[in-house]
Length: 202
Image (cartoon, rainbow, N blue to C red):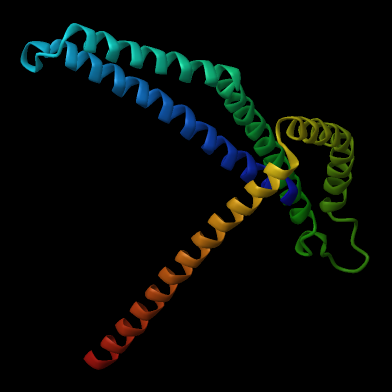
């Protein structure tokens, strides 16, 4: 489960980078196109020559074609979609492993196995036998699913890039934990001040 949580963080980081590139390109195309339309529409006020207007239009159309061609060459949209699909499948597997762990923890509770000496076996025995068989039968399917996801992950992710993304995600996680710790300290100080204030009132 920890292994796939780490893979999900890597996919999130890479998906975010691809999404930023695609969104930035699309927004720039919209802005440039709107700017060209504005200049052409207000040309009676700007008094720009037709040659300059045509040159501006040519520059924008050429840049747009270049940006879209590069995005298509690197298959940015396709890779972004593949990462999103793989992330969803990894999340499903993590959820399945979590549910399996919860079922095991429930059956490991001492209370459901307790009983007086000489008493018949508790219902937990039958429940465990049913859960054991079902979980054992589903284990092969989970292993196959894991192997498939790992293979797909290795296909779309470069090992060096994966290491860099792992470090980036861990740095962000560390930053979040530090900020959370600062807030926890502030709340602790607030509680102390509140307690001191209440004691003073009494």
